[in-house]
Image 1: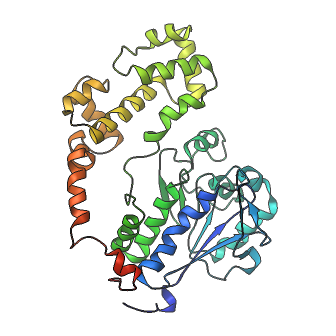
Image 2: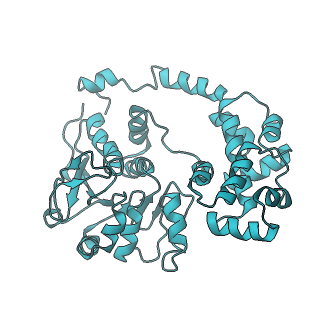
Image 3: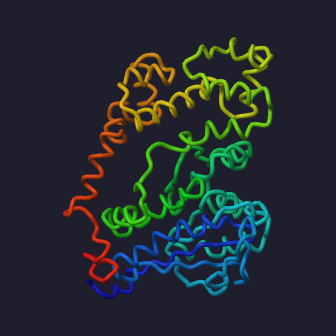
Length: 357
């Protein structure tokens, strides 16, 4: 086993924390960097947590306190990656001049900067992103898109974004996707794959947040008339979902429903219907043995041509390729590859200090 890295291979990764931070936003993205050290037997990364004054901070839910590594004043002169964690406390942190001023002071010392989930709100409030595109949780993206100061910077469907020196991720566990991408950029794909396998994760999720947000949005919508329409769409994807039919269910005029739906959900009814049908089609392709035509019928697309057009426009892949990659037949092939002695990472050897690294 190769012992001891050269000094210039040590990457310092800092996570800024504050009261009411989400614990997963902090620990999740840092875990891959610690595993990079463990699996290689080398000190490739130095993960650090920091609060403004070095004091422990309560996490959202108050079920524990996080003890930071240091205060901002004691951070190293060079930081390879600085991330701002998300959580319910992000709004207070964004208005805390002490916190945002520290972000501005640290920026020149950072090779890369970014945020996890709603940490984007704090990052944007610091004023250092200079128009770069950012990713954030889909609900926060909706709020930010109504803010003229940030509406053009937000990419609501992205899992994570690399724009210049800024690396930003969507909801909580998307921070792990971001961390794996950083490790791949630093040390190559194989190490990132080994870490993902160790964590029982896919290395990079396909598509974007729209695969998760549509059904959740039905639960998040406060207007009962709009929620009634959304739930009807989810429960009846093969039905006649014309505006006139949906307007009758909402007891509204077609014009009023179209306007109200867009105002409440920030997307049109036609886009919402497509989101729902696409989500259902993806699940059918992933978990069932149905033919492409059956999937098109059961998801409400009707024809394979329509299904193909939507998949290629939204996911940049055909339904048949998607099924080959993520369907049940591929799962068996994937298991065979993972279990093959030539491909499998020997965890026993890793634990015993005999890693191939």
